Structure formats: structure tokens, C-alpha cells
Image 1 (cartoon, rainbow, N blue to C red):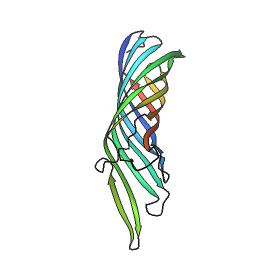
Image 2 (spheres, rainbow, N blue to C red):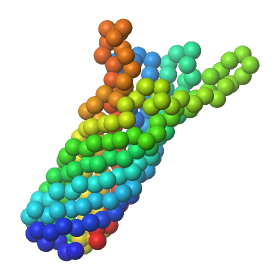
Image 3 (cartoon, one colour):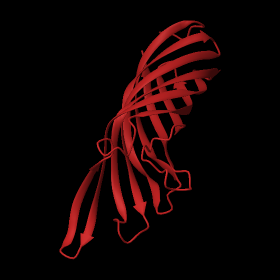
Image 4 (cartoon, rainbow, N blue to C red):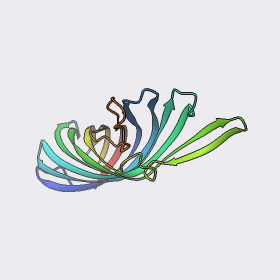
Length: 199
């Protein structure tokens, strides 16, 4: 489909991402970035030459690390997460050369499928491998909500190159911290670099 003033186009995209949790209120835990990937599709509705709406559905795999500053817990825990996100971007777009530059912002909702942490506990008899299911152990909520931003360039109305950033507005830590005087929260953040194709 050509770049009409009005019209609907569909496409596919794949991304590499770096993600972690913004952790507040826990003095001995820090979330570190890890590499992951996502893939999915999008629909683009050109409202005018300079404005479009683009909803997407992306299945993603995220990896990060929890670094713990204590002698009781392991120093690092590898965290693996899979789920789906549905962002809806409001895009401004401008012709540059044979293609178009675009920039957009919008909300997203997310649903987690799996959330596992693996780590070693070091005892006198040696290291013991452990795994923890964050959903099963009521540590992490499955639903997420946040805001995303995206910048990109579409080459000859087909191939898209883009970078994005998403930050969660919802505290996904569901543990009871009523005993603590500090506010505790875990919020997702993700940086992505993507390649798309519009049919």
C-alpha cells in the first residue's frame, strides 16, 4: 500500500531489546539490563499526510539480572520473562527524501506468560542451583501498563527502522510491604531497536 493521505497498512516487525526493573525502596537489590527480543505485527492508519495511528502486538522475551548486596542471598539472579505487549502510538510523520521520518508516543498494556529467576545459593556443601517462579510465588503481577515512545524512518514506504523506549507506570511488585516505612516498587523499562516491513 502506498503512502496515501488516508489508508490502512499492515506490517511485521522484529526487535532486539534491553530491559530491567526500576527498583525503589529495596536497598540491597538492583535491576540490571539484559538482552532480549520481540516480534509481532502492526496496523497503521494514515489519518493524514502528517498523522497516523499505529497499534501493535508484540510477543517478547526479556532478560535481566538482579544484583543483591547481601551475604545471605546470591550476588546475581538471572531473570527471564516472556509475555505480550499491545502499544498504540499516535505518530507524526514527515517526508524526507524517498521515505518518511516518524515519531510517536502512546500507552501500552502487557500480559506476562512466564517470569523465572535462577540463582545459586552457596552453602558449606557447595553451590545449590535454585529457580523461583515470580508469578507462582506472588512476587510479580502478570499485567502491566505504561507509556512508550518511538522514533523511526520508513524507507521507500516499506522498510522501517526504529528505536523505542517503554516505561511501566504500574508497580508490578505485589508483595505486602505494610511492615516497611519505605515505598517499594518495581517498574519495567525497555529500550528497543527494531526492523519492520509494511505491506
